[in-house]
Each structure stands twice: as structure tokens, then as C-alpha cells.
Length: 230
Image (cartoon, rainbow, N blue to C red; front, side, top):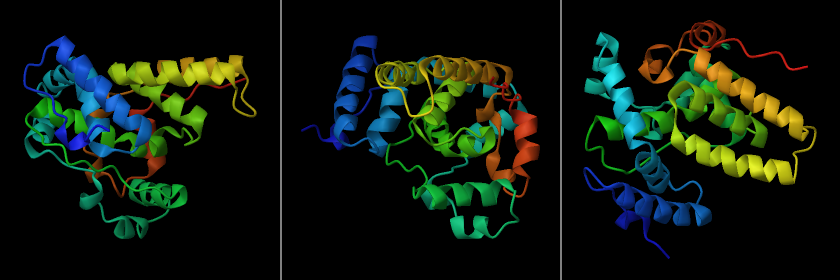
């Protein structure tokens, strides 16, 4: 059994090292899907170059530079869900708090050391996952999760999303989810991907400043309209 606490990615790691560490992370995640260290480390192994490109994009704007400098956090220890739920119904803060309560889950958390901006963006991507469910309207069932992965792929080019989509799609084509046929499933993923490509890049948004903003307002600003499904 691999001890996740012994896993790390050296600076300037080679492709071989990244694949080796990613493989070991996957072995841990097979038995412990919610492991915060391996989930984060897997993303960094596969998407280090993507995150580096996103860091460069953020450095081109004042708000992006401020995010990289101040490193705001949406981890469990930084969120007061009780206070957020007291905000008016329909606001982002209220919606996020209710999302966690209704789905009986907790906010993202990790013990992984942040050695640079690339590590931070990897963490930021992971911790915005649940918030994106609220903004995009994608459900938390299997199909909704795959739609959100397709959205993230279109929006950021995340390679980990490709891996997740590949496994999820193979599973769905073999055993379709109730009520969602194979052709509808593929149409929904393609629509989510195109929606992500057409939407504003979300990692440059300081969501912590928008808890009192209506979800509908923020979604209209950041997310392209969802395609109509026939």
C-alpha cells in the first residue's frame, strides 16, 4: 500500500517522473478517491504545463497578479458555511453553502505544500470545482460530473479532465445511466465543452468577493448560455 504522504513532485521534474508519480497517485485514488494530497498532486503531474500557461495569463492583468500574490483560498478551513448560508437566497454564498449541505459533502482541502504559483493554480482549480457546479448548473450525478469536466476542458484545456472523461465515457457507453442514452450523453458532453470554450476563464475570478452577488448575475457574466438539448 502506497503512503500518499511519501509522494511528491520534484521541481523541474521530467516527463517520466511526472508519469511515475501520477501512476502512484492513481493507485492511491483507486482505494481512496477523496484523498486530497493525491488528487492535487495528480493534477500537477499531468497539468503542470497547463497551469504554467494559466499563471502567465494571470500575470498580464492587475487582478490576476493580485490573485497570485494574495493566494485567496476556498478550502474548508477558510469558509464559514454557516455565515454563507445566512446570506439571501439566490446569492453565490448561499448557493454554495446549500450545495455542500444538500449533497452532504465538505469543501476541498489539501495538505500539499504550495512551492510556487503553478502549485497554487493547481490547488485553485481543484477548490473551485464545487463552486462551478453552482454557477454552471451541472448536476452532481455521473453525467453532470462529466459535463463539468468537459466544460473545464474547453475553458482551461485541463488534461486531467481528458483522462476522467475517457474513463467516464467508456463506462457510460458500456452501461448507460438511467434516462440518458449514449447519443444524448455524447451530445451533452460536446455542448458542455463548447460552452466552456465560449465562457470567460474562471480561474481569474476572485469568487471570495462575490458571495453576495446573485448566482444568476455571476453566471450570466462568466458562463456562456447552456445549449438547448432536443
